[in-house]
Image (cartoon, rainbow, N blue to C red; front, top):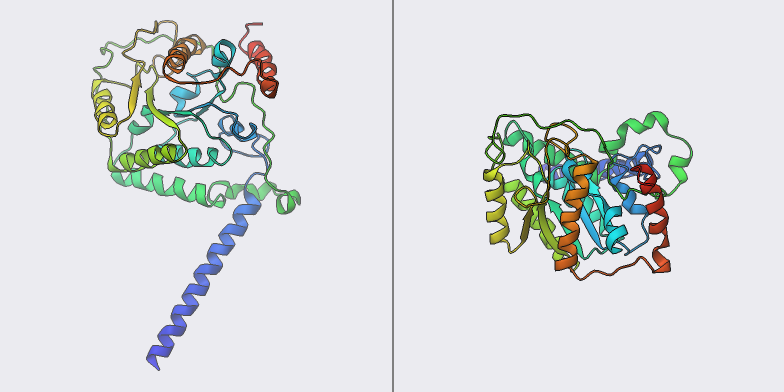
Length: 324
């Protein structure tokens, strides 16, 4: 009798859990934005505009935190070389977010090169528990959109129950965040010798970096670790940690902080050394562009009718940055 009761209780628990999961799935379908636009409620809509690009037309992805977001300009590379590159940087992007975002991108794109921002390895957490909790939160949000978009219930319409997810956000900046403010760096600490709370690559970082590398390998993509100029967020200790990781995992690591690319921290930063402004972004983008030209076998698409939309986007881009 006790055994039968235990079996019945177990079945009830399983049925309950299945019902909960089905409910979460249904709610996720309903509340997730039905487009990749700002107006639809999509988070990081500039980076997610990559979902609008025609399938398998993006040569290069630059994915990471805000140093990429405001530091790398895909349209500059298009104008000079005709390579289709996309900036998938977002504010405070964690390494697990990078992985899940890239996994989603691979559903429609097969880039030849992926630049992964080394800066995502060194976000400031109070302790390892905070780190783990954040990872769990973002994992649930990617797998179950209701966790991220639960507040959308306030604005739901009939279309949310019937409309399939679309992607109409055609971003002429290709994910790049244009900022032309200038606030020079004025700190007595020597560059590359500052101390930070987080200077080690944790086991979670390694786990997700290895998953990203495996994902790239499965799609025949060259993965490169890349650090943008960051006077206030980088030092020799962090650089050495990334170099060691890259060597043991057979990856390339490019550090623009030690390259002679002409960055002037009096004129090329928008917030006293944390991020580049447009002037600095042009220099960093040229650094990345030179690498692509010398080390990657990419195609110039500028005269290909199938990519005419990029020439149209260039006109809008030039207007935005005040160069036309």
